[in-house]
Length: 228
Ligand SMILES: Nc1ncnc2c1ncn2[C@@H]1O[C@H](COP(=O)(O)OP(=O)(O)OP(=O)(O)O)[C@@H](O)[C@H]1O
Ligand SMILES: [Mg+2]
Image (cartoon, rainbow, N blue to C red):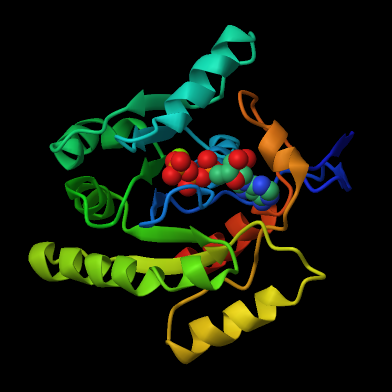
């Protein structure tokens, strides 16, 4: 079967990939509008194809993940994983109570100074920080990393942060500049990136289905890193 990926290219479904290791991912970052919810929805779709997946909307400001879910349900196209809006200060306790029912966990969280960020990273320590390759966004990342380190010091839970460059225009040249900045600052960054594409924008309120665009390689990279 051939479907259209969010970047507009044809995406041919291939055979079932190998099973994933259980993944517990926090998608966070200080700045708003950086692609957290979009990344959460696309990655959750990929995780749900592998095993039972719980997605939590822990962003008290926008609750867009929950909104996305409600719109999808309203269209008769529900998302194939559970979504709970839990922007509460006892998020970690609540998640621990449910964790054994799900193979994968993904938490869409707000600003990195919030209690929610700390709660989320305690139970979902693979921290993905989406970021456009723009200086104004890149400069906020060290604060997010400092917050992750604080969680580690306070709780003993090891947090694994990674920047994911999103909405990248491959012809603009700013990806290379961004990668140079990130490397100079010693900030862990994924090799894969998500290109800019209207498909990601138009996906709102839909289940992305098997055509996950660049998120397929994001998940592959996560699989390799977590398994290794
Ligand atoms: N790869 C992409 N290409 C083009 N647009 C994108 C891409 N990823 C996300 N967007 C768009 O960027 C905007 C912000 O994305 P999103 O809502 O996922 O960010 P967010 O960090 O969750 O925002 P908020 O802080 O408001 O919750 C949306 O309009 C979304 O459709
Ligand atoms: Mg959001």
